[in-house]
Image (cartoon, rainbow, N blue to C red):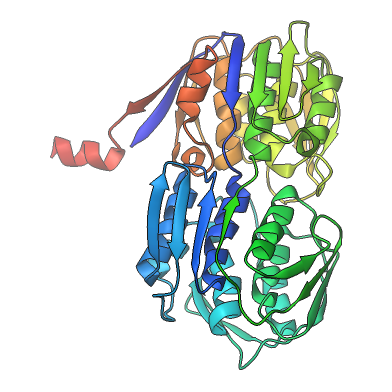
Length: 429
């Protein structure tokens, strides 16, 4: 078991390179199943969710070759249909993309209900509705999602609410279906565009990704390709918020600035200076932080995955800020951890009322989920004294080499091996 130990109070200076997008990679890797050929995927982030995605394909019989740290080749030709082992897919949410990919290629899929971060109810009913509209029968049996179709036929599918996962999953299932599929009220996030571009590189006909209407004309067969994943919008935003919260001057490189506009706007409002370049943004902050109100929205609004990180910045900003969560229920579980550090936050329904305090104090805190974990790291870097962050396996799901990247910027953070309670009892016995 490992913890992060952080000594706070250091401003951040230097450059940080952003890795490939986690939320694109965990969909693109299963989507490689749709091509009966060799697919080369570049700029994949070295994170645990991606490692698990690769491991699942390999266990299913795909030949996966690591070309270098950020590049893999997937040859799915040896795969014969099988159910996906429960113990693998039940641990992370993106395992559900295997349902769409396998349904598209094999017309059947048996995959565990998704796991991953726990911050409220995140059902997959929209995914199931989409598969059924394409002609599949879907049942949940003993924690497994079982989908089967004699054939998939294009359909007009209206998403009752904007859902990134359901939009991508229906795209995966529809690219090899007969006829035209239209997804209305589709999500518009950058990684949806990236997945669509990847599918098109394999011979699919997907149009309109990035708008709220996506049209997919089914093709007979998909072929191999070489594709590079876009930079990670949320990783970039996390380092931007860290630079603004801690103060200093940081150049965040290998980004698409347009994807970061909603984050940049709120950081400017809070007192940071943001300069955009072609593929980088520079964040400087030397004056006091000031209050601002933030409401999470589907893209192009402020991302829900940046909400906990922004809460830390507002916790040490002058004045009272309102932080409203309009995407997920129950995403304020981390607030109790920040309160332990001296933050003054009251949650009323979907809004956190944050009264800025002069400083936070280092204590032991837990990463309650991936993005809350990133927030705990930022809080530790802002706080006086030493902070220990536990349950860092959540953080490793989505941030590549976070200790090395932050250390290079001047943060005092290290990864420490500790005995779990179970190990300690066994050793004592």
